[in-house]
Length: 310
Ligand SMILES: Nc1nc2c(ncn2[C@@H]2O[C@H](COP(=O)(O)OP(=O)(O)OP(=O)(O)O)[C@@H](O)[C@H]2O)c(=O)[nH]1
Ligand SMILES: [Mg+2]
Image (cartoon, rainbow, N blue to C red; front, side, top):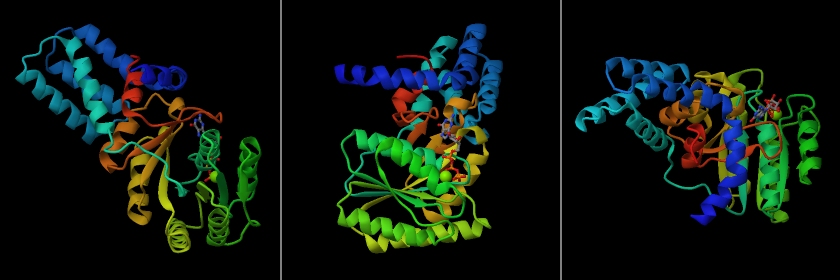
């Protein structure tokens, strides 16, 4: 308990701060609804449904949650709207829960994928900082050779965090960059290799093909390393994020999701839609642009922060 409390202090207050807009769009509206109704009737559920859908929880997931609530209320003859709050909180926590806590293994290779502008490079910089601070040896690979200045952006993160970046000139084969980086990680016995990738190529098909190729290089050159394929999604893009996730899941097989820019949206419910529709664990969330604005995702803490409870 003590441990949980002290862990919660710094990280948790940053999370609460970062979720300010999401709270306004979701839980503060739920609280107003509860205050207004006091007693539960059909209109109450209709309005709850609307709040969840507007907050981007997604139609399917909203229906599932609200239908279950309706049933529970009926079965247990709950009349008091205040009691719904905890039930809703419980439901959201259940949707977000994962079977396993994420623990980074050594050696690990993280392949970070996602469409352009979602926050891949920034997330890699933040991850480099996180693991470096934990005393791990980290290396970054500039696998986005498509966009001019992509490698430079990563090198800035390298300087900021004191982590080396393996890169080649613009236009070179991304798989070759990853090949070099994997050799370096193996011979130097690096704990974690973070691989950046391009978000945009001439076509989606090209992008997926390239990611498959990179995937194969990693598997072939360092089969003993634990591999994570992290898909980065931008929380401000709404239901689009769900569509993107389905595409990447099918094409490259993702092991976890990073949801960025949660600080920038009142529609934080998207995190619930993504988890519920994809059934891939959410591993990290981004709540700002600073180096320590990436948090390992802990469902209970997240839901507490979203509901403004501690
Ligand atoms: N507010 C906020 N901004 C973020 C977060 N994560 C990333 N950003 C910003 O999003 C913008 C795009 O980030 P990048 O890391 O360059 O995105 P990318 O996916 O690498 O983009 P491409 O390389 O073009 O595919 C930058 O301005 C970041 O500072 C976050 O959690 N919160
Ligand atoms: Mg990038």
